[in-house]
Each structure stands twice: as C-alpha cells, then as structure tokens.
Amino acid sequence: MRQDIIDSLPDILKNNIDTLENTSLDTCNNYYMTNSQFTAINFDEVAKCYKDNENLDDPPASNDALYIMDNSHFYFLEFKNGKIEEDNIKTKIYDSLFILSDIKYNDGSKYIDSIVEFSKSNIEYILVYSIKKNPKLGINNHVYQKANKKTKCGGVLKLKDFILKDVNFYNENDFKTQFISTLKN
Image 1 (tube, helix red, strand yellow):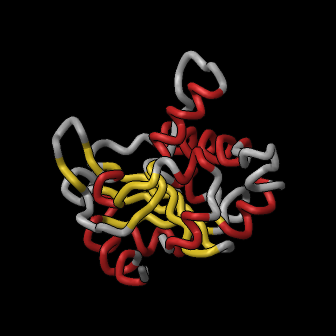
Image 2 (cartoon, rainbow, N blue to C red):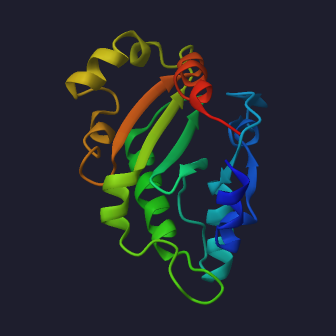
C-alpha cells in the first residue's frame, strides 16, 4: 500500500500494517502462501483490537488482510492453506464488513459512511487457496467463476454485486501472476 494511503487511515487500521507474506501465514503448518513484501492491513489483528475496544468476549471472524490500492479499490484477502468451508468464508466477509463499517477516526468521524454502497462499488474479495489441498476448485475455477455456477464456494460467488464489487478465487500461483504482479509501491 502506498504511504499516503497508510497515513490517511484511522489508527486501528494504521497500527496493524504488515506484509502480505505475514498475513498469509498458516500457523498450524508454518507455511506462507505468498512471499510478497507489499504492505497491507492485517485484518485478523484489526478484529482483535476491535474486540478489545468494544469489550467483546470473542473477536469477530475476519479476513486475513485488507489491501487498499486507492480510495476506490479495496481488496479483502483470505488465505486458505486447508479445507475451504463456505459458511466460514461468508461469516468472515460479513464480520469484516461490519468491523470496517464501525471504524472511526480519533475525532469520532466514520472511516466509511455507507458500507453497503461503498462495498458494492469498491471492495473486491480474493480467496487464495492451496491447489494441492483443493484440486477440484482449481480444475474448473475459471469456468465456474465466469459462469457464476454452483461450486464448492458458489454461495460466496453470489456475494458479487450483492455486497461486493467482485469475488475471485486464485491458487497461489495465480495470485502472484494476476494480483501481486499488478501492485505498485
């Protein structure tokens, strides 16, 4: 993320800047799904801070990262090195959007005024998955996404235009070639 974007963030987001590599860590297997050093917001950490700030018993579910390219291009990223559970993914999307909708600057002003309209116009969701652990998802991924047909995560695809601008599934290599390669410092 560009430094001017980072500088304009509310503290709860600004204080959780990390690398995409660190946000992609599968702690159970000590495996990074990307080695990208581009900065992003560690949204799992934002959810923990939100839990503390709101005195919640448990942190809300959350996507792994939020990458902001500019004021109209936000990307929620979820890295799945294991089994993909559609309901869990959808919960992470909804909870992450709720957290983002409730974030404020120190003066009390909201970071995003109307999350639904903002999300439908500006937020894309990317699920990065392990092709080794989810080979069926990879075989027809491109065809299924373009046709918006029922897949293992077909319900997630239906969130496109409903609450998200776009939804994409990338295996680790496609994430590198189709997303990381488009980023600039």
